[in-house]
Length: 356
Figure 1: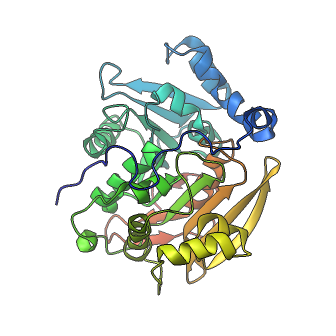
Figure 2: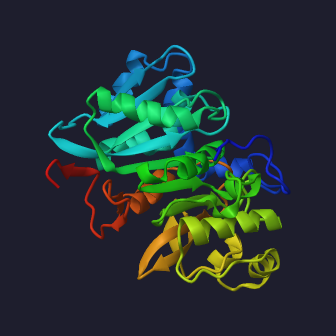
């Protein structure tokens, strides 16, 4: 079976840009979330050309992170971020971070995950994946993982996570289909683009993963690029396949476009309304001076799919995207012998002892 990275705009709704009509950019820039985004991107703006400048390395070191750049010449380059106190006698979770479209990795590394690597003690990889739309992600992923192993990075191979934003969510979808046995959990965010763009397989029953693939998507109500509720039947059909066959939500009832639209217009539950999805469980969080609506599909009390929508957030990642995603991902591992999805209720950080 051939896997491929979808090209062009999503079928149906299309890409609408950074924000929806009515978005107040000045109010956004003055908000806590907008200021956080500006602060996160400042280092890339200060050093737009030299991604390994002394000032860049100093910035990361001051935040407890070591930055390295490999294969710097050409389309195969990738940056690796590790805690300064990395202990080669331990095993560290790995986050493979697919970049947004047309976004150089020295800009995308400001999305929050490399910064979190120092605090939560995991390894983060920011690859170029062969081009501005992650054009060669399917071959770069195994190449880079093998290279990291050869270089001696102490990776916990049961805790390899794949995440990506915007075009990076499409790349995350491709890797999920191609390498399910090597990935513990995924975050294609915002995710709507992934569902709307089309399928990554020849037939709906082509999925060969026998165990659930946990998934979290984080979006914004003012996102002009990746919108919810999904607005085409094909997007809904793709979504149903992901929930039923990939996440393996127990007794999942397929959603129709009409039912989704009804939830979006009539539900009094803010999470179901904003996503147009009939979740098992919903709740609201309060961060950055705004509400974040959460919907989950659960199995035996454990959330295997979590969708989060930040009120008023446009097509960007704020200070809380990475922590929200990591808080979900870190509880899952992939048994390398059986392929089984293992849920771990209490996880302190990204480290495990070698003998665990």
